[in-house]
Length: 404
Image 1 (cartoon, rainbow, N blue to C red):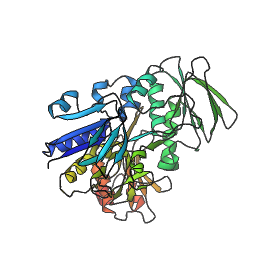
Image 2: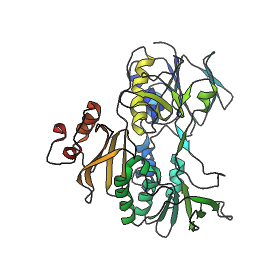
Image 3: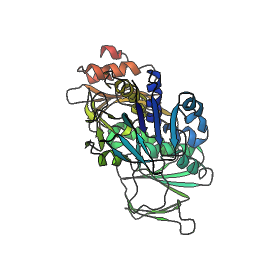
Image 4: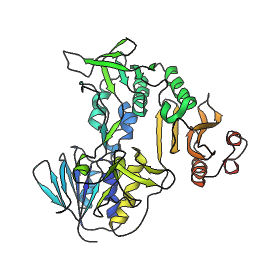
């Protein structure tokens, strides 16, 4: 195919889209509009290895600078797209220029949800955020984290491992309760308490006051139970917002906060595709989903690239994510909520177990393997087969998963 491809975004999904196009043999022009000044990078290590200092910045890059040069990708860092003109196939940039496209891929990702009033606290989304936060961790330092989600807990684990005193304020009675349910969320809470995290659960935040002298990100957090928590650093991790403003302004339909795409990742405009955090796509197992998972940013671009070049592939991978917190390493596949029934096989005390979330008919809709790495495919097969299982047999380690 001749013509030009424009990719709006500077993260993993954008980089993998450019790579997939070249791997598919596309030799036309590719322009990438990356808002940050850095080369496109992966974000999961920002709360783990990069934050701890065990992962260097170069390891965050899916593609190095030479790749973009050798493959003739016009990578524009530090410039942002401000407007899409679908009629004239133009993307306008904040430097006053415009780029014409034949096909456009939106990979704009998401941003942290701001605390009301936007006090000058810390957030974690960019490599610059992580670098600044890393410099504030260590023995004798203190950190209050507002929000006990995945990012908050990963940062808590990294900070405690660095010797930082950590307090987590979470309005639910257990961290990750809405995702994992009572039993598994309780295991995670116990893990953090054993490592010295002060979990303030079932507790909200009345206000945040940053230091007057420094202007933040240290200061005081006032909780709904009347406590005042002082810390060198206050980190807010209360979720993310998809960057869909430019898509909405261009008239692209949104649903559940995401840009609506079909199974081939195309929007209703056949010349515009969306991948990664912003894509609201039809999952063949669970219906329409928008999930802010690393795996979508990694895998959706290959499907989008194929279809941009005239093929007809569909995105049908199970939702997947992973986390590492202290000695707790896990992978999660599928899609469930904390309201689903949970069956567990293995030793939860030793943190070597499998957890399965079941729907009302005892079909497995999600599975987690904790420090057990040989059952990944069997878990995926249980989910995709949609077969009804016996929860007691599912929890019995003597019965192979394929025979449940």
